[in-house]
Image 1 (cartoon, rainbow, N blue to C red):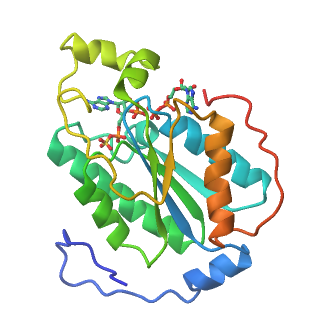
Image 2 (cartoon, rainbow, N blue to C red):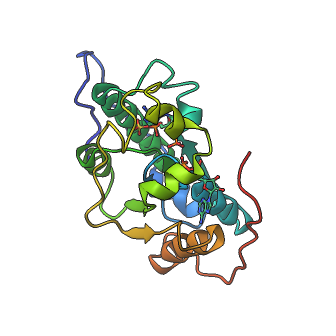
Amino acid sequence: MTTQTTTMKTENTVWHKPQISKLQRAELKKQKPALLWYTGLSGSGKSTVANAVDALLFTLGCHSYLLDGDNVRHGLNGDLGFSDEARVENIRRISEVAKLFLDAGLVVSTAFISPFASDRALAKAKLEEGEFIEVFIDTPISVCEQRDPKGLYKKARAGEIKDFTGIDSTYDVPVAPQIHVKTDTQSIEQCAEQIVNYLMAQGFIPAQAFTSTVTSTPA
Ligand SMILES: Nc1ncnc2c1ncn2[C@@H]1O[C@H](COP(=O)(O)OS(=O)(=O)O)[C@@H](OP(=O)(O)O)[C@H]1O
Ligand SMILES: Nc1ncnc2c1ncn2[C@@H]1O[C@H](COP(=O)(O)OP(=O)(O)O)[C@@H](O)[C@H]1O
């Protein structure tokens, strides 16, 4: 596994092997680290579904954490805009942070548009075999635009926002996602259950009976 980023500028640093391994941390939690990498258009339902999954994992006693696009852009990535270059850097930083959370033994979710297939591939390449789970939140742009939960499509159509994904900025549709959900035909609960069932079937979390308790969307 690689331990160095491609943008490393400091030569005189040495990698210290941690005394407690990722495997030990994960075993303590009785789970296997995984990264649920949600990708989809703005308004497709990434945040809603990722929050529902995270809540479900919590009720099942799993140790998880969610990194959400809008929230991370309020802090760590507050210096980045929406040019292609800024989006590449956004996803690079997120993938590095996610990797740290995996090292802590967690089941991590990232909810970012992550429009470029090449960046998603780079994120995958940073992890161990099988840890990266691409979750395609597949929703037609017409539905996203109708939902327009933040009024951004309206602004983009009016020319008030430039480089808006799906309008005047590219979105590479995932070719072979591990999980494919369609939020225009599946309920939030169905999407969340499909994803949690995948984690159980693949042995990332213990198999157990559950009933979805998802009743609302996040604030
Ligand atoms: N130009 C443009 N294009 C797309 N999205 C925009 C833009 N400007 C602001 N927003 C808001 O920023 C959220 C997307 O941030 P991400 O970090 O997920 O984007 S990316 O992965 O770097 O492409 C996105 O959040 P979601 O709607 O949750 O996807 C929008 O709220
Ligand atoms: N099946 C569904 N799954 C996810 N979101 C849904 C679904 N049906 C309707 N929605 C609504 O669509 C909107 C999706 O917004 P959000 O989760 O912020 O998307 P994104 O994070 O991709 O921008 C929310 O208002 C949500 O309530």
